[in-house]
Image 1: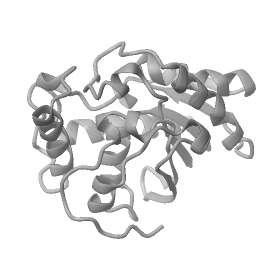
Image 2 (image 1 turned 180 degrees about the vertical axis):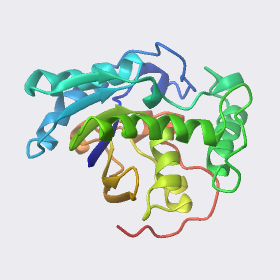
Image 3 (image 1 turned 120 degrees about the horizontal axis):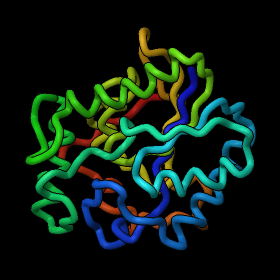
Image 4 (image 1 turned 90 degrees about the vertical axis):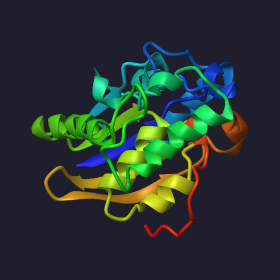
Amino acid sequence: MRLILIRHGQTPSNVADLLDTGEPGADLTELGRKQAAAVPRSLVDEDIDVVYASTLVRTQQTAEPLLAQRDAEFRVHEGLREISAGEFEMRGDHEAIRAYLGTIFGWADDPTLTVPGGESGEEVWDRYDQVFAEAAADGVRTAVMFTHGAIMRSWSAARVANISGEYATHNPISNTGAIVLEGSVDQGWWAHYWENLALGGDRVSAPAGDGPAGREAPGNTVEWHA
């Protein structure tokens, strides 16, 4: 199965650097809609069976331009939502962001750790796994999944053979950045592509407005090998 994981477009909460993880979440900004509109051009050669989005409106809005051009089934799945910020929800101060990211990237050593008032690594990874398991059970060959930056990075570090925790910690995913994977639920996943910046390129990239999930977390940088 081929999985194309794409982070949603920019939101006002991203611009304000807020930990906005609850439902329904913020809408896209004008730039976010331009980022979404640029996504289909990057996927023109992909034979897409199903398009997924999380239960947060920003992923569904990011999926709209692709769905307008493709005759693909659309599914909304709760498992693709962002990692809950718990007690840090809608905070943008340094202490809250550091604690949130520190917990998430601390899961490499202890996935039982819990974001205060939120989720553990085991809970997050299990619900993400379930989305892929259901797609595989339905015979899906290629799926595009509009999801969220922190969970893309955290899950990939835990489940993808050639992505280390160090790499995911220090290589954020910008709005409409993507990770392309191939593999299976049973045999595991291999990353063929990790695109930090917006799929539409420099003209729609705005790293300064990517929000906390588009930020590097504490740790030591190491090289990632595709």
